[in-house]
Image (cartoon, rainbow, N blue to C red; front, side, top):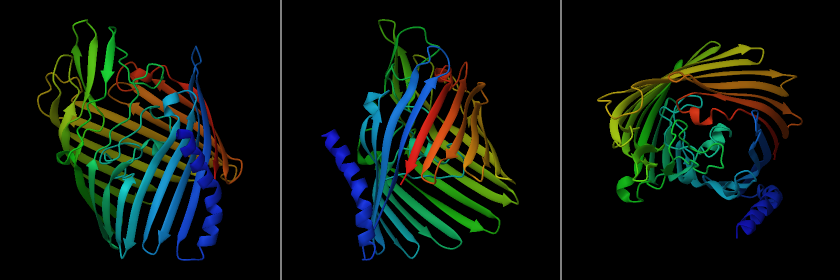
Length: 412
């Protein structure tokens, strides 16, 4: 069955471009694009195991007639390192309608909010796929949600409303053979992780929210409101009778109210976000129940377009948890910073980039350095090095996973 779906998908990709050329002269417009890529990564430390070996075909199909249309994207993946990640996967599939500033989308789609770069303050609708942590492209890590989005745009302002009947949550691996699986590096006793406690699919668990934004002279800003869940599970840890540790993922309702701001200043762009999470679930200590607390989350960023094809971006986000912190293992104050540097060379055929996460509270670091060389307009070759180091905090479980990787990509 799976092989048949993959074959059918590849045949569609092969023959639809010709169909599109014939139909574009009529009233139905067909668009097809996509890419083929292959990616390999190996640990730089002994025993130099392979951490990734995967190939993928991505296809995107658009059918449009008048003001209505549909969009479908899907992946056909062969992953020789993580067998359960091989197969045919629907990515997005939604119907849309556009007219006089009104944009309606219904179906499986990716919804992004905020102005932060690869950090999540107000951008908490679409969860993330962490089965290979952050080693995939950030846009590929986003998980689509199945819902309805209505957006109305005017020259100076816009408004958006969303409804998500059935929520999606972070995808995490617990397979010990996966080098990016969730683990407890500081725990010396046997332990197990259970992620089966996602909320029931019932009307009372629906997500809903909205956004309103304005474009003024020299400044853009948005205000947000969302009734949602903690998409990343919080683990309730208890010691079983046999002395092992049981970690059970829990999800709790919470409300987010937030705002963002973007101000261009010559060669600089200043970005800021702030969000209050009301009733956010907090990580408990062992043998304690999960509690909810309000948290304040703020980010400030600066982008510098320095000329000469240089770009520099820095960000700092801070989290403050209010209320009683007894039986809570999280820090009351924690921070995360990012630094992005890029430079184009050789008439823009070679791009050198470095992006770094810095866990300020714990001293951890995840740095991705890579070169992107355009062999042709359609074919790109990548060579990169991921450096990870942490003794504690969220990067600690991957502290030994520094790796070298290569990637080839053909776009059509």
